[in-house]
Figure: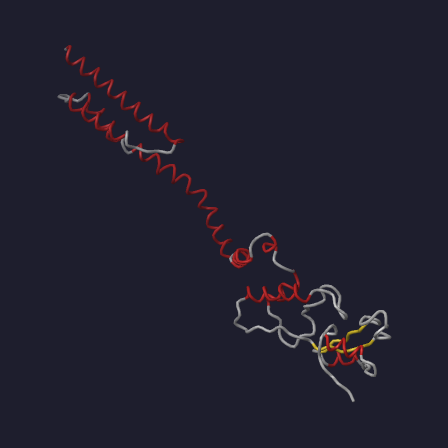
Length: 247
């Protein structure tokens, strides 16, 4: 009688059968041929004494064939989950066993189904570099958005040269807008029949408005320059008014 079943060699049933008197493990002399003809089969060797060193079970190396167990995912599954499954399979099945060394499983070899692109990437390069330093969700987001980020950076580089001048112009325009009114007042000082009292009142209103201007600290020199120019026009107006009174 013969019994054929697929199981991990470390399973309780396999160990029990190996230790049972009268039960022998059948060796596949054509294991290599099977693996060549049937891609889903692999030729493996069960080392001598691996089941029981003391009793030397099995008594010699045994050539066996092993079917490939595939981890399948639906075609529409999110690529991030595919990669996560591949990483989890590596942690679960990567330990050494009776017929495999450390890291031998999972493997992209001897599979009947096309390998997902994300799984192939994991087997070739390992986990993405970012996942070694960042949480999975953040690393995956950055890894998938690098094209978008590159496009954004390509746009930001020219903007970085345009925005600062625009910002400076915008800030300085809060001050420069009042120079037109100041020049108009100054131009009327020397005109015939100028109302000195009225011009002083306009200067007072202008100065009150400049007191409400808020600027970043690095641009306050522009504000003080405006106030200084207002004071200069005021002094000239007072001097002209005094000269007119003397005449």
